[in-house]
Every structure is written in structure tokens, then in C-alpha cells.
Image (cartoon, rainbow, N blue to C red):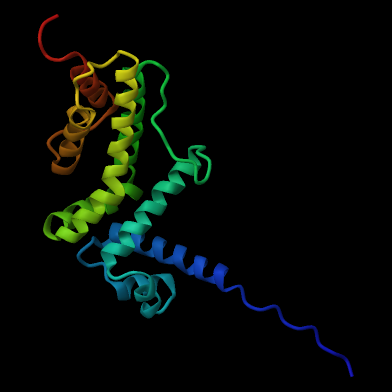
Length: 210
């Protein structure tokens, strides 16, 4: 009697990760194609080729799915840009505060104009206005970590004597971050490298004649 070799047990971890990534891709694609209001858990499940119970096992709402998918997209972009996996990102400190801020804001412009990021970003921002819980999660998981990077870079500049010691970095960063966000969200004008470079110059040097 010939003994048949035992079949390897299915790798549930790999299968779960494959399903998770398929769900991310489906959620982001649907938001781009049909918009946030028409994106549903059922639609995401069908697009990803999974049962909707699989989605509800991991997430409580479509906003949760989209938020996590967007975070993953950001991590992918960081890896594509050469960041090491699991290595915390920081705004580079070359000793030139203006140059460092301009560089990271230019990268932000690229991201905001990338259709992969723009549609889910707008969807989450809009939903956060009408749904307080989504808004708080969007701020805590997406906005606040990014703002903290600017605050850290400004504190380093304070220590180097490049920024007044009495300046609150958390308020100061809003001089260039908030106008960019408002212009992008409300379509009050085009966003470009020239625009964000000017924001940094105005923020660091003020408006008064020198």
C-alpha cells in the first residue's frame, strides 16, 4: 500500500492577508469610481471576492475600511519612496529649515494631486464633517501623526536657534499646513510647488517690510 503524502495545511495567515489587501484595493477603487456615498460594504465584498461577513469580522463600517486602506496606501507610498519598513518617518533635518519644509510640502502636493490619494482623502474628510466619530478617527490616525512631524522639526529648529523660543510649534505649523489644506479641500485655488514654497517663506519671514 502506497502512502500518499499529506497535503500541507492551508496557510490561513497568508489567505487572510491576501483577503485584507484585496479589500483595501476594492474600497479605494470603488471610492474613486462611484464616490463615497455609493460605496457599500456589499460592493467592497463583491469587488474583493470575499463574503461581507469577512469585512464585518475586521471592521465596523465602510469608513473604518477606507481609513485603514488609506493608511496602508500611505505606507506603500513611503516604502516606494525608499523608507524602511516599520521605520518611523521624520522630516529630514538638513540644517536648513525652509528647505526641509518646502521639500516635504512639495511631496504633499504630489500626494494630494495623485488620484489614488485624492478621492479617498476627500471622501474621508467630507465624511468626517458630518460624522463626528469618523472625523475624530481621521484626525487621530491620519492628520495628527503628520502634524506631529512638523512640530518635531520646528522644535529642532528652535533648539538650533532658527525659530524663536517662545513660538508654539503646534500653532506655527498651521501657517503653512492649514492654507494648503483649505485651498485643496475647497478648490479656492491651484496647489503647486510655487504655492507651498511661498507659504513657507511667508510663515518664516512674516509679511512686514524688512
